[in-house]
Image 1: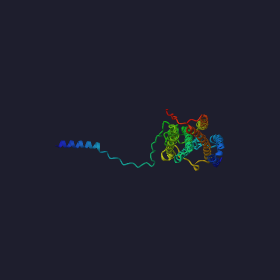
Image 2 (image 1 turned 180 degrees about the vertical axis):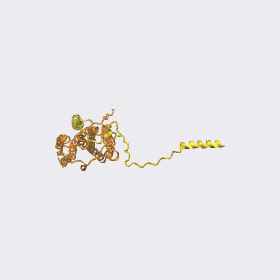
Image 3 (image 1 turned 135 degrees about the vertical axis):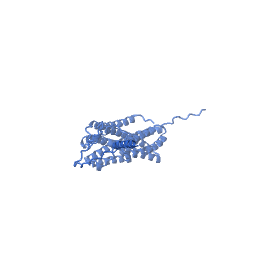
Image 4 (image 1 turned 45 degrees about the vertical axis):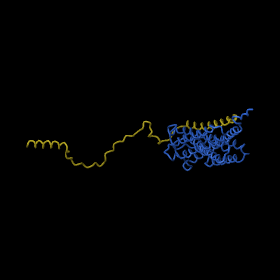
Length: 253
Length: 92
């Protein structure tokens, strides 16, 4: 497999996402198709990551964990970026659609981030000798995840949908401040975690498998956000259609 | 007065004899080959940390399988949670 093959698949997935967003007629089949593609790609990722990719120079076979750990964290960062985009869009022009999409992106981002951190912990044990270290990258990632858990908790604090949407949009923008700190933490501070690599410093088969893993997780990110968005929309609709909590009492004769 | 001067002179001679070192003999020429440096003991850490970074991690497949298993289980579990929540009646 060449490093360009995952890019071709990425183009297909992005085309599917664009079709889903722009064409209501395509929504019926795009997410099931992307989900099925994700399952097939995940099965292939097991083979490619565990057996096809060469062992890393120093980490040896333990380096194979990076093909699933890094894409998970990338997807979390992507989901949080979608979340803040929807938050800004909501504050600019109030829309239940952007509010529901922000909620979906935050929850899916927390899922990918939490699994990514757990995978990082599994990788750290044989590499660093410890499951956890109070390192700038690890601390900033934990703070970022906690901020988004707080965002999701905040959404359940009020029953008023409009107030919930406004408060959580502001919280989303505040939470997003943690994201560049996470990204640059390995450069700003003396971190045990290695800095970002780029394709020119990594073997081609390793780049190919890492990209394959990223496209696989992108498929799941898309499907999860679509399904979680539908859930959020149905809850919004139910909340907006509810009668007032206290019906006005009839005037006493 | 004469015995006092004599005794002072004698005491001074004895005292100076202790303080002033005897004249050193002329140094012999330096040997052509320098003496071997004293052996520096190798500092070792009880946990063997000084050996870290010098080799390649051996094994660790159990961690690799655990990470891949966690990723797959996570996808299945989150998909199941979305499915279950979708079946529930909508709650504001």
